[in-house]
Amino acid sequence: MHRRFSDAIVALLSAMMFSRVATAQELHQAFGPGEQSLYRVQYLGVTAGTAQITVGAPMKQWGQQVWPIISLAKSDPVIGAWPIKDKFVTYWHAGGQRSLGSDFFVDENNKRRRQRIQLQDDGLTAHVIKQQEGAEPVEATHEVPAGAMDLASAMFALRNRELVEGQEYTYPVFTGLKSFLLRAKVDGRQRMKTALGEREVFRVKFQTEFSGKLQAQRDIVAYITTDPSHVPVRIEADFVLGSIVAELSEYKQGRLVAMNDETGG
Image (cartoon, rainbow, N blue to C red):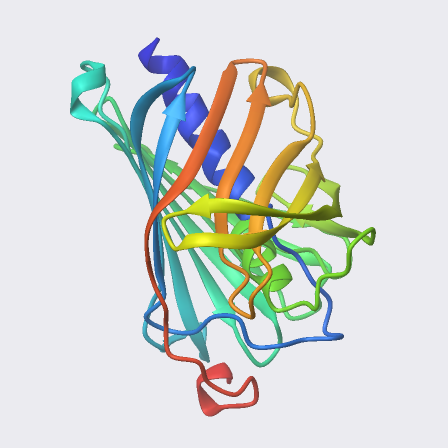
């Protein structure tokens, strides 16, 4: 049960990160530094943990100005003796509407590992470093499709799009091991009770290409507010390892800045 929930938490973060992608067209400002979203996570119908996503203060990474977008997944202590505290950081370049790379820190059952991805300037390669706790790092260079995004940058880019009902968006995604094409379709609108009150939301369906325990049994569905902030308020996913629901419980809006502001590089 606990190992399966560990996999489910990773899948949840992936689903949340997949919920938004974009090109550099038809953009508006949806988020900024200081934004924080907290989600209650249910696995197989039982509250099993939380996921928190924060847009951090501007900083330098690889010589460029970025916003670190930090995703934290924690298991609930009451579910048992398999503690989970995973952290994913993507380094968002606001001016370019892309990520320069990411760090993934995995802490599960007191075993730790990390993965760093640095997307190269040519846009066609990525340098990946993986390291198990107590072991030497393993480095590799991968070819990636032009315009490839990591999971979190894909998540935030779509929020800056003018979403259109019935429109489908397809984008290349690189996970650190494989590349695949993400498909997202705005399926419609509806009213929904949320932690923000009753809101109109877009219902967006996503198709991924995970395999094994993370293979989706049906389309991942995200409900995203139709207001300019495009806040995801609920995400539903059915994987081979079980069903997951993430529901927004708290939200704090960030500081909106122009996309050509110096904080974007």
